[in-house]
Length: 189
Ligand code: 5GP
Image 1 (tube, rainbow, N blue to C red):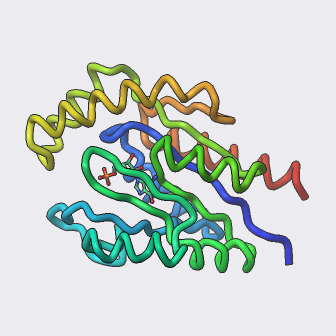
Image 2: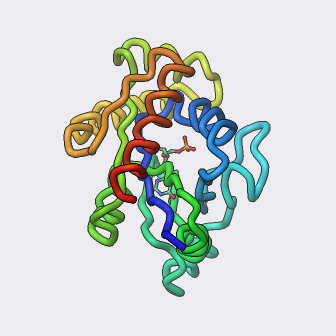
């Protein structure tokens, strides 16, 4: 059986990655999202094992020591990492796997999987991003500012990604990404 694609999906906090991701998963039954481990506290409505595996710092360090993570990074004071086994199992069974990760993680994945597909999601503008991040109300103002600074820094890396998509409309962005995936699968088969 042909292996699935490994897709790196990166973009600023608040850009709408999660919302678009949900629509992608609804419309493409061969697509899976890798569930990362994080030391960040769950937001209201987030469930352990669904959005993330929420773990302690000690547990996260143990996962690093045991070589259980494909990549990991610190983002605004918290650890985030991709569990290796589940990703490899899904790819080996022909599923296409999206890693929703930040730029440091992207660099580590790109080195290990040079033929991964990389997609960077941009906001329509920085002002719009600030509005979305503040409006979401899930982070305190100093964390919003931290995330915004990191977002602006990360956007300078967008040019190194295979594809840049601007999220000004969820349905349009979702279709754009579905097309990218469909075209790559056609090219590679
Ligand atoms: P959030 O706290 O908003 O859920 O995520 C913060 C940032 O961490 C986002 O840019 C998200 O894409 C990134 N992130 C989530 N999981 C991982 C992971 O496993 N590895 C890395 N490197 N970044 C991640």
